[in-house]
Length: 443
Image (cartoon, rainbow, N blue to C red; front, side, top):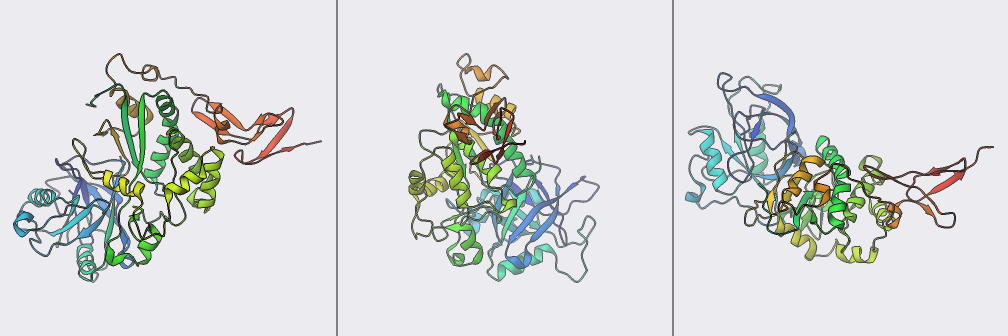
């Protein structure tokens, strides 16, 4: 649950159902102790109410530490306090494939908070915001005449605005056959703070084991990128134009991510190359250096020996008013099937169609994947902590190489490979190590 004041503090936890819920409500200090975590609720649109709001983890449920979820806020016309089942009013909050998860705003009072959350959960929402109308302790300082956050949300929604909110949390696998299938749902943003830093650290650390497992045919890894579609009424808005392609059909979940200047690629029959591409792109094309663009992405793709024509064909025309088969399939895959629930949290790891709920770290994830093998059938990498693969052997690891002099910038290490211009016969080569190295002689 989440707790909302005037302006709000918010507390978050995970309910017993498959969705992650928040409720913004007041709990007396005598009943619960709240630890405040700031910047856990962020309004990303519309511009006039954009900002972050303080949060505190509630005293029940299981918080989704280390992940985030973006959604669009809805304020129901009927059953505004959420005390009755929404089915009685013919209301459903289930998201369609490709749509952002629905966060439902309900009013405080008339019933227990748990009942409100339960009713909203059964109606298919991914989160619930319970608006508090009492000004008490644990508030964010503000001038008395200003409206509370819940009032601001209601006004914006009544004006027909599309209100998007991001939620952040800081902190038995089946084995049907002899191959483990696992998926990583993520985005390409490298400027979202601790969450993105944690994800990139995991990708760098896990690249070695992942490539060994994939090359050996022990696993089938599928990377996914969460997208949402822009509601038709907002397809011409600045937000949708910058964050979406194909006329609003596929949009980036984070406001900092702009589809018009960046994209990802994956080469058929070489799935392990994804790990090289992602780590190289993060190093060579960082957002903070304004290098997050197609030109930089293309240079990374070429350095890894990937086929640009195949990738461009896969990408299609981002300006076309039509479906992209690959991205459409990605959106459809976000909807849960069988034992797997909907994918709404970034990042999400799924192993053998079961959502992984442990820490996103190399050792923990490798253990989860290895538990997907029948006993005695696991590969050697599951039985030892020593993971080593010479990544300079294939395409020179994507690093610079002088074929005539047989000089390379690729250096294989325990953690993977690095591209550093070499020192040869007392001559130190200088450059970025990826596309350029030049010998500098000091005499």
